[in-house]
Image (cartoon, rainbow, N blue to C red; front, top):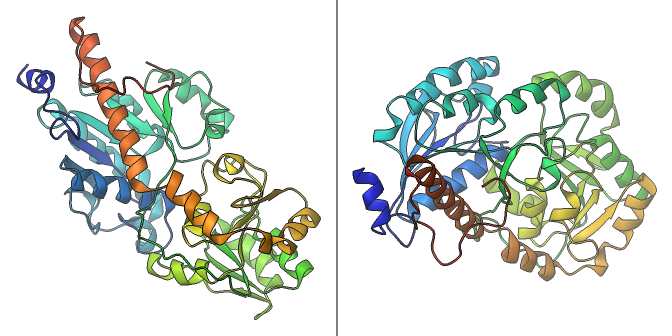
Length: 384
C-alpha cells in the first residue's frame, strides 16, 4: 500500500517522480549491439532516455551490455557474436524468473522486448507487464500462443504489424525513435545507393542489386549474414557481387552509419515481407537520405511518398523512382525524422503507457478511481 499511496500522492511519472521500471532484452545481442541489431538499439535508446528522465531502471540483458541503468545480466556475453545463438530461448527462462520473483517489491512496471516468452510469467505478479512486439506476427502456427495470453497489454511498432492478431490487447502503436544527434545530417547526396541491415530472402537484396544495375549507379551493401541465411547469401547474392558496381562491405557499427547513409544518393529498402517497422528507414532520414522502398508492412506508415522517399513495387518502378530521387529535399527528410522519430517522442509515449497501465491495474485491484495520469488522459489506443 505504501507504493500505491506514493503514486496517488503524485510521485510517479516524469513530472511526478520516478517509476521503478524493468526493461527485458533478448540475450542474442548486447545492449546496445556492437554491430547489427535494430531491436537491441531501440531497447538501449528507451532505457537510456528513461534513466536520463530520472526513472529507476533495471535492464535485464547480456552481461557485456553498456547502460546507465542497473544491469542484471542474464548471461555473461551476448550469444550471437559468441557463436551460441541457439541458447537464447533457454537462458531467457532463468532471466525471466529473476525478473518476476519478488517483482512487487522492486518494480512498478515490467516492459519486455522478448516477444511471447514473458506472457506466462506476467500473470504471476501484481506488477503490470507491457510487451513491445518487435517481430513479425503472421506465423499461424504461433497464433494459439497469442490467443492463450490475449489479455497481456501489447505495444505495436506499426499499425500494420497488428494485422494478423486483431484480437490481442493492443494498447498503442509507438514508432521507434533515435537520439536526435546520433546521426549527422548530410546536405549533399553521394554517388552510390545503399542497402543496410540483414541479407535474407525476405529483405530481397537481390532486388536492390537489380535496381542498381538498371539505373547504372553503384550499390554498397552493409549487412550481416545470419547462419540460417548463409546458403541464400552463397547461392543468390554472392554470385551477383561485382565491385565496385555491387559491393558487399559486411556489417557496420553504429558509428559508421552517418558516413555510410549520409554519403548515399538513396537507401534501397527492397523488402518482401510484412516489415514491422524498418529502423534503417528512419536512420536514412536522420542523415537526410531519401528511401526507395517496396510497399510492404510498415513502409507506407513510415515514409511519406514523394517527400521522404518513393514507394513502388516492381523493379521497373523502383528504378524509375531512383531516377527522380533528386526531386526530393534532403532537408525535408531530416525534418520528418525530427518531427516523428526521435527518442524523446518515443519515450513520451512509453511513459504515458506505463502510467495508464499502472492506473488500470490499481483500479482492478481495489475498484477505487486513481488519478496517476496527467492532463493528457488515456492514450487513444484500444485495450484498456
